[in-house]
Length: 186
Length: 142
Image (spheres, rainbow over the protein chains, first blue to last red):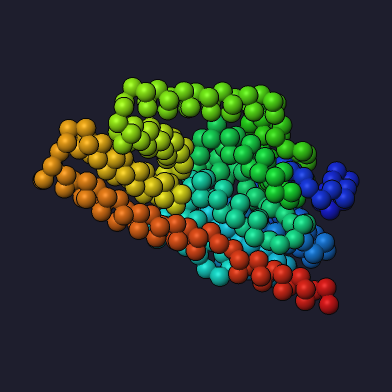
């Protein structure tokens, strides 16, 4: 089944949800793009893209190639290394400096989501698996619990991407309980 | 749940009032009583900020801001303690000068903290992007 159809079937016309999207590393890129393309180009929904996997420059060129309008998205990049891991702001993106700085990532997400002046908006978190490399599992579980609670408060379409095969089952089960849906997108 | 929260707040309020009343009864001097009363709030502020620093990510902007704020609280507390001691022991002359030193240092750190706050606002403010999104959506609808 196609990614769009799967999402349509599971989420229907919901305007607010917290979704844990499990993808295989093989399909990771295409699934991410399909979700974003559907939200931005088809549904015309603005949102926040938090990248911990690929630097903003790479994401932007992929989005340009796929005709996804980057002006509809606020980017938060926690993977690009900055001078002394300090925060750097450009007009297109906020660079956090390190994926370990969960407090700054949380603050940036909160401010970015609240800044978008529309009822319908999304928050795309890419990805949980990268967080695992830099932080302890317990810290991530706390962080995702915090994020899921916040996503409900912000009333957004929250999508948390996780590379399925790279995370253990017990960990995924714990995370699934914080989310409204957990979908395997192949 | 709401009733429990209200009760908790109510009990806490009564405890604070009893505490204040006790301070004013034991210590007859109003100035010293107010000094002690202010100190308790200062200490509470330091405890809460310390807990916040402990739980914030190392190297994060928010943590740096919290550390600056903690330094402000500490110097203000030192100012209060010294003022209180000066009042209790009737210190005069040179012994009163540290009061001015502490308050001056407090203001300097306050300025630094305010600058950190300003930087936080610049770093984490997304108004320009939000305006760009608004314009883009308007354009798409037309």
